[in-house]
Length: 316
Image 1 (cartoon, rainbow, N blue to C red):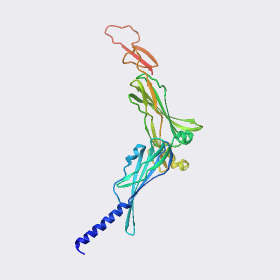
Image 2 (cartoon, rainbow, N blue to C red; image 1 turned 180 degrees about the vertical axis):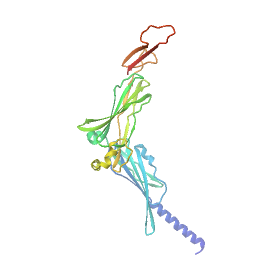
Image 3 (tube, rainbow, N blue to C red; image 1 turned 90 degrees about the vertical axis):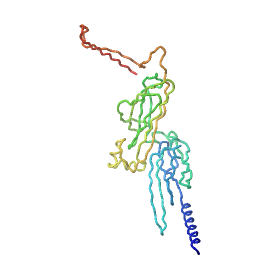
Image 4 (tube, one colour; image 1 turned 90 degrees about the horizontal axis):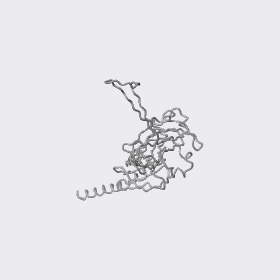
């Protein structure tokens, strides 16, 4: 056998080995549950076995899911001289809506996973909201028919019956408005559905800058809470009790899971400036004007200074 023949045989063996390695690559996606309640998170485990480069394109999940976090690990084993590589990605995702959703096929090179169905139950169909969800939001306004540039008091209440950790809030938003936070948060206890809750209350002042229908998009609250199976253990353990006592603690705990809750949208019907009024104008429920002179007695002398202070108080 000459050199050229040996080279051809060698290349043929290498090609066969390469094909076998490529064919050995598999990609599996496993959710931790097939049915969840709206607002709950879902853990995805994506496993790739065999040789390969790169990572799956997770952007295909963005249509129906929000990716909260992801982590990657790699392990290699050698058995009888054969090397096996396993890469794993752990994703925490939250559905953007309820209904029967599909985790689409993920792709890694020429390998694809199988699509997976997930049922997302609406909170109101999963049972009483106070029983089905450990956390929920309430939002309201003092009026839904303000005048343009008039003040609207928007109140957000976060109800929780479990300890909270690493909380974050996406505040309400509305186009063509000015939004200002009012004061500090209030905390108190309240009873809903026969259950006692801890409440965090936050208030905003919203000033619509155009007339017509204005939609206030709801706030979104994301927080870590104890896993149901470990909640009682954690609450009894004084080591974990302190970080959970602070809803905005940055500490982490392995026995927690993220959930995401949102309020509902509110539509304002903003009335235009009434005919006969002038710009600028001050829409208010009550208006008080007072004045103070310094000095008090109005015996003015030529060349002496006098101070007149006019105070306008408006109740919007």
